[in-house]
Length: 143
Image (cartoon, rainbow, N blue to C red; front, side, top):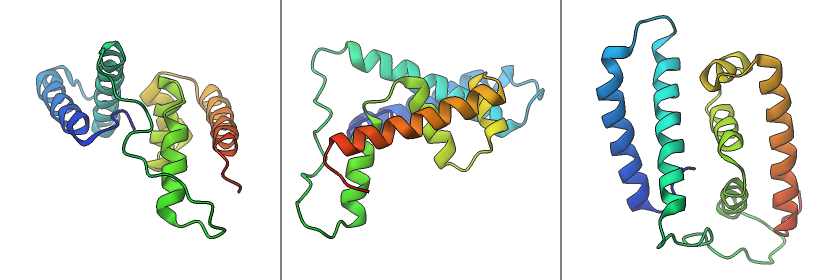
């Protein structure tokens, strides 16, 4: 979700791996290893995204996403295309919330990973889901 094209995705994976390697000595075991791993990966992805936004040669968000047909039957690829285009309109925290939610983390785990309270996480997640629905509807997709 934090990189639009395969080259950027590959760069991001390498950057996350490097940051995990560099910061492993700093892991004290105060939290679960998976929480620490998510935190490092998420912070690296957000930093990467900020750098990408500053790049002058940034490609448009629609690149690589197939056009949606007007057919009444919408296949899974079309649904995913709508979803990923909508996710690109979210801010960094909202992207992180959706990413962690899709990964199947509990609200409490998401809260720990993002440094938020559990209640705030629930509220932000619900608002983000609503925002995604609105974005997708604006794209012309009917639920």
